[in-house]
Length: 86
Length: 402
Image 1 (cartoon, rainbow over the protein chains, first blue to last red):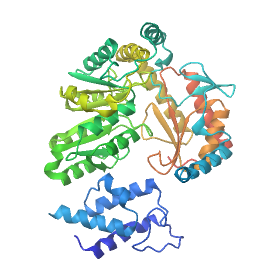
Image 2: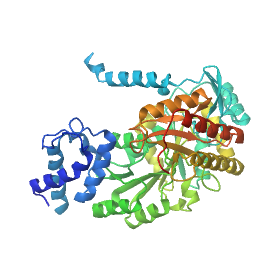
Image 3: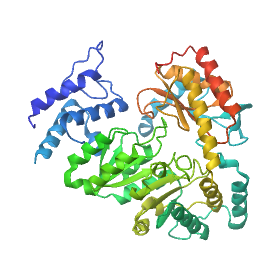
Image 4: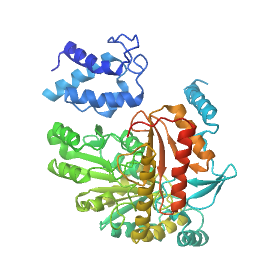
């Protein structure tokens, strides 16, 4: 799977449980994972493991500091799923 | 100012922590150390139940004497790198003793346990290699990974099936992967499923490093750690560990069944560009290593104490780690304020334990982490349990369901 919009949809679904039901956060491509979604570093690491499972990839730790927004994340996943298909 | 302003948040956090606890738990001062299990804190005799001093050897008369003799005969420090003027006969003697203890051809000493991980991981694995670490590995392992050029991925904590899946994903590249696990995990005291991990790494033709920092002297008939207990020592490629827990001093080591580590020694920057351990450190460690090897009775005493504390805290209705271990972590899901209050109340009652707050904890809960020593008396362990019993009520702590 390498279609960006499909990846984005799947990613948004995985992010939903991390957003508190009573908060009024609206998830967009530009949402900042830590600042806007209020995820701390522990939650981000936990989230990563779930996302890796879902996309069947292992994300190298060195890629993580560059992932700030939902869009960054989706692009990284697009790149990784493309690589794993080669 | 702009360089330093990024620490403002830490300053605010420190103020808040001090306001709630009365003390700053991360600036805790031992005014006078009395023994391996007791200290004076604010003029009060305090039981130390969070020091990783598993065998209680810090005040062992023979270890102290050995250090004093070395200090007098060989001076206060080596003032040099192992590769220059910092190798004394005793450094080599201790390396030989570690190699013999583990039945390995070679051993390398480091100035701290942190530097053992930093040196080995950052040097052993280079650009085209992979490091596959347990997600709960110690900060020194994460830092070592950042220092090197290898690609680093994580597997779910103590989940052998997840490790297998990730090695599968790597395909042929798995044969250039180093899997990294720990014997006993420092925060919750749980042990790695080592036999399963060994089977998986063998099947994928990968290598395996185990950090026995908290299991050395603690597990195995002869105290060699989890690999000895699980009878898989001949399958482990690299063992690293520290002197600053069971051995009661400061330093680190790596032993390997691969003699090539003697060449790697000359490529490890954190090993080369630092001063070697002082003669006193080496001398007390040599003595402690011999005591640890023959320390079956110490280990029995340690495990009796661990079982007593683990059972006692569990019976209070507290949530503790998954199994009896010399690391007994009380897991608090009541938030940071309650954890700070309880930590301070315990200290007020003359009991010191480690307060661990996220992100240093495996999950998002706070921990009051106890570590047990063979040197604790039964009365001291009972006093720790009693301290929890009294203060848990006093601070109206609602423990999570066990």
